[in-house]
Amino acid sequence: MAPRAPRTPSRPVGTVTRGTTNPNRLRRMDRWLAATHGAALRRSPAPVAVDLGYGASPWTAVELAAAAAYRRAPRARTVGIEIDPARVAAARPYEREGLTFRHGGFEVPVPGGPALIRARTSCGSTTRSRSPPCGSGCARGSPPAGCSSRAPATRSGRRHVWVALGPEGPRTVTFAARLGSLERPSDLAERLPKALIHRNVPGEPVHAFLRDFDRAWAAAAPYASYGARQRWIRAVRDVSADWPVLGGTSRWRQGEVTVRWEALAPRLG
Image 1 (cartoon, helix red, strand yellow):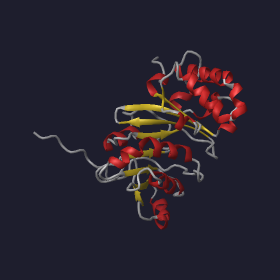
Image 2: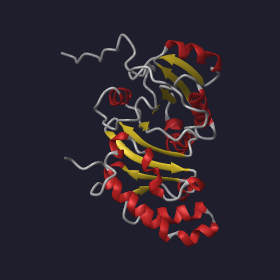
Image 3: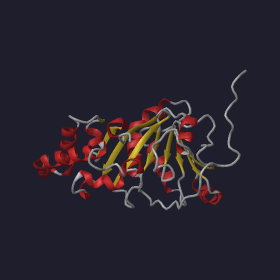
């Protein structure tokens, strides 16, 4: 007997959030998504990027569309999905070529499945790929570029930490900041997602990473005379000797550092 096709939910999966995200709050994540997953969008025969749960205003979906198109994946289409029908109706006037809005939730109502999902506050508190609702939506669409879940950025977007997810589970953790706003890298601890923020204690990997990063930052103090960016690059290069840091100088100079999830994952028990 052939297996049954998965049933499409009769109503959107999820709950309405406050949806109060300021313009440009997610700009650091957008730059990272465009740089890291732009190639996957370009290769896709039907490149679709989803802004899942864009909130009371459509700004984040508009900004994601611009980031995806800017020299990275000009054929990409962006779909903003919201569970509140009134928010979808309010966003319709902002539709244009390559940007549409749709009523839905974690079931991600995009025919054929998206190449990329950016899940916002609604999904940012979990990194368990098999725990609904976030993981179920990501796994159902099986986006080759993975899903991105975020912890809340500061209102200005100057400090931000997010987790990249794939159908198999968490892949990476990215720390990003406006470097002039940091006294030390561990200032970003307040932006950790819930799966990590309560593990930022001695004996846990995320605590050890931030401790080592602070030490590398202190050792790189002589580079501060060349600017915070050069000091950050040096500190990231030093900490990468002991931690699985991804990317290279082109990303580090943006005030980013991406680390493999398994290196920072909470210890069992």
